[in-house]
Image (cartoon, rainbow, N blue to C red; front, side):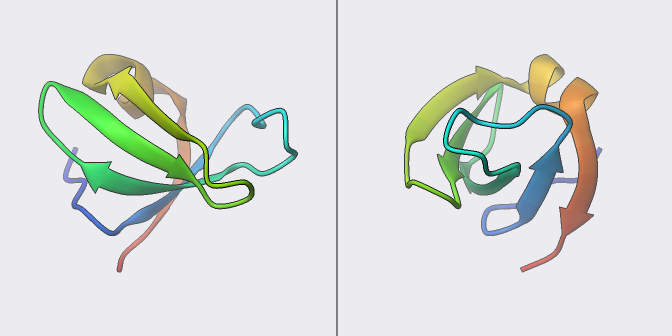
Length: 59
């Protein structure tokens, strides 16, 4: 799956703030994601991210 820095992804589950959209800040074996709702930063393994993506919007 081709995911790039700056892409906005919609996940299947909501973040506790209510947003489902995340911005990709770093790619590799792990992804660094920023919540578009509250700005929370997380590091998530690539496999988990690719499994839970619903939609990709290119930057």
